[in-house]
Length: 126
Image 1 (cartoon, rainbow, N blue to C red):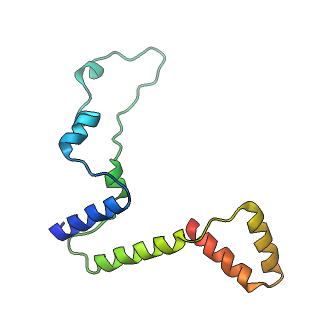
Image 2 (cartoon, rainbow, N blue to C red):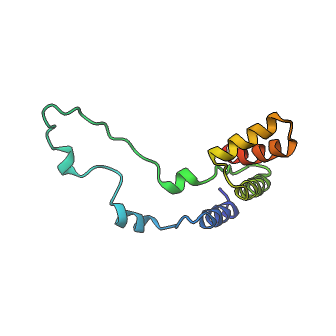
């Protein structure tokens, strides 16, 4: 990643309300993640309990970060388009079950405004 892309990513994460911390702060909060402590590795399994496999869970920052390739052309435009889309769908409230039923009845009667409202509300679910 270029320095500009890293700065944009940091800005995006901050805009999303994700706190950025250093690796040292992360280790202090959750401890080292390389290996389990020796005391757990040497513990004998409990009789009758199935053995569990260790599974790595991605950090929230890695899961929420958009994938920006180093040589992607137009990644700024893609990110801006995504932001614009997310803002626009955030302005429309989700429908309640009662509202969906009413709109469906109006659509059956040929009300195009009801169809437009249903489509706009459903865009949040896509």
